[in-house]
Length: 256
Image 1 (cartoon, rainbow, N blue to C red):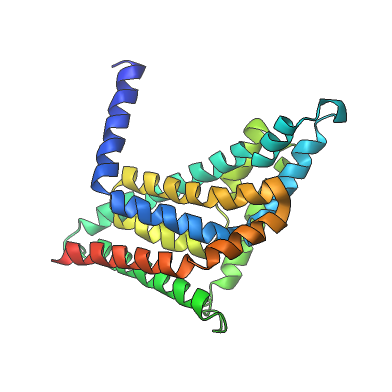
Image 2: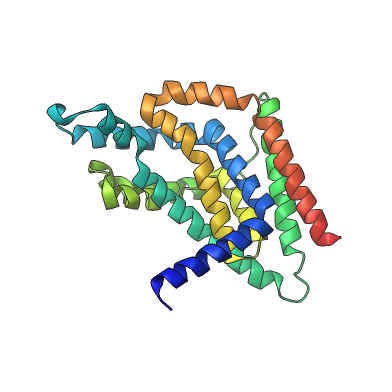
């Protein structure tokens, strides 16, 4: 089978997954859009701004143009690398969940994962509406997350010097492993599919959803990020409630 035939077969399989699991993919895409504006701009925005500064410093003043500025601010290799990591995590988690769920007595795993993700999105919506509520306890995992995040950041630090091309891509791959609350909920949704391809596409959709807010930060700094975040934050609870309802309905369909 030649390369074109393999590509055609792969695209056909992706089309089947999109047709079959469109609700799950849409839920992850919208979760990325909301999470990107209300969470990622604060957490990942500094990484984006550091790359933009480093990339533009490499361009001589005589060669600077609006196109160079825009492409430098987009940091597309970084976003591609981050999407690669998310897709890999989604594929692995869905594959493991699919194999475990196939074992006798564990067929409820997908239902539990969908229900867990639905509760996560409900809680996220509630925190946006009732901002005075205290943050959820870390259940002892905060230290582990900080330890892991510090190790990943230390590993990625050398790539910040000239984050272009493969170095920018590698930076995205590395920083994609930094722990993130929104990421946990997205992984639960992807894992519930039990299909490696669906999990990969779902997490890629989640990564795609986070891109617009980070592009705004890269193009115009944190001011644009805050403006975009304020606008989306008004409808974020409603979007998350819809997501929770969709995931809850999917869980119910598996039971019924």
